[in-house]
Amino acid sequence: MIAVILRTATAKKHEALESLMFVNEMMNNSLSTADYKTLLTINYIIHQKLENKLANMLDNELALELEMNSRLKLHALEKDLAYWNIDNLTLPSLNFDLFVPEVNTAEILGALYVLEGATLGGNVIKKHILANPNFKNHEDGLNYYGVYGPELACKWKQFVTILNNRVKEKDYERCVNSANQTFENLIKLSKQLS
Image (cartoon, rainbow, N blue to C red):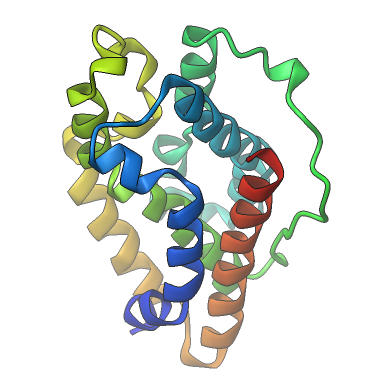
């Protein structure tokens, strides 16, 4: 099944990204608000550049199956930016060529695997951030990390089922490449903003 292959084939990129995204600081409750604002900025820029494009590339049947409108996260990121007084009009431009998948189901789902997977740890991350004294009384600025709330596990299982059903074996390589390139977008942006 492609979901298992993706987990293995993207592991190195995933680890590289985690090392740039303050994961240790989140888990040991030492994340600063400045670093959190950097995380928000990275996630906002990538979602702003990719989310609607990916959604619009899906055929109608697949978009309905995924309940794609309920998976859009840009609104949560916009709320967080507003809460932390980050003006999205003053954010930096990319200093690299953004990877955007072809209009191909396997490639689109590969890219979405990365964006959906980023929310998978969201509830755990949010709990750790809220336990951090730097974020006392700042729950209103943590919308992105709790975007699916109690539906998180259900939405992930639904996504993985659709991913496994829709990506045919002949397209596995395209799906994996798209996921790795989407991780690379985040890695490059993280390096640019750090």
